[in-house]
Image (cartoon, rainbow, N blue to C red; front, side, top):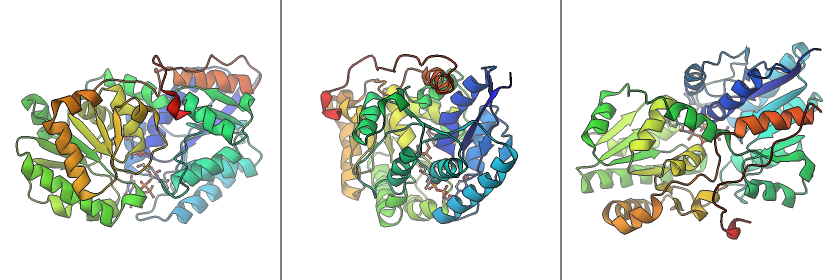
Length: 391
Ligand code: UD1
Ligand code: UDP
């Protein structure tokens, strides 16, 4: 009997991190053939993750262009996949999350008559324009998906509210926790000596990441000024910013940080180093989606520079706080956590609403069931039931 061909397709750093456990689990199942396809929407940041997990893509559309546009990413992905599908005809594709690669790949597969499996389905901020374009990408992908892998009960409820058939939804947990648990065991050394020194010194670290499109420009400039203020107010603490490769991000945030000796700006860190840095950080300040999922499971308070989130579970659990991007508010919220031990303690407790490290196993079981090769596993449920306010 020939193996069922399941093609994972992804293009950016976070998709690569979250797809790696799925690829590993699919490859461990002899009933599946799993030709890994990358669009190359990201280049260095994607290759860095594939290298870490030992994944060599079978197909690389190599669509990356410096300062690429969303429409450029969309059209080059659809064109590249259209050609690929005439050569390699998968039985299903797996897409992950909410990037332009995700939606473009889902569209290309749908038009070619190939069923779409969507990992991390059902996240909703309920604001079409924030995050942009991710909220729209998620909603569009949902419309053309055959199997929805919701990470949490909340994301399943979002899908049900949109009239998705319940039989097409499996609650798996988020594979980001599978990935995090795999690399966290490795305790890799930092390649930047300043970070190794920070680890040895036991200095408090404020870890910062930012890249969201809706924050680019003025808001991000304000965040840069807020970081400069924090650096001078807390000279004994260290601010570490692994800078996204997007030049638009760097042009906005870096000028305010020039010449500050307690601010360390690095290139994007390999995932193992980044997770170690999250683990030693005192406070995490971010607009990232993935970091909102990972840092709570490491017991770190997370201040999110956004006005809404599609990941309400850790907000409800009290470890994530939405603070927006106002310069003064950013300074005040970080200062509160540095200066008020009670406020810090209230946020610094480990919670795992997003997964238990078994999401890839549940994913493969759900894909097997889609092809009549077995039964799904029971839905993921976190140890602690979350407040009903998320429903
Ligand atoms: C993309 C996703 C976003 C995700 C983010 C993860 C879309 C619309 N956005 O945003 O959902 O949160 O990835 O980081 O899909 N660049 C490099 N090298 C790289 C990667 C990026 O130089 O390896 C630069 C390029 O100039 C590129 C720019 O960054 O034009 C932006 O990259 P792009 O993939 O278009 O969007 P992101 O903001 O990274
Ligand atoms: N990350 C990393 N190195 C870094 C910064 C982030 O490996 O220097 C990881 C982080 O742990 C998370 C993912 O990248 O798993 C998040 O990527 P990003 O913030 O770019 O995208 P988002 O999650 O917002 O889509």
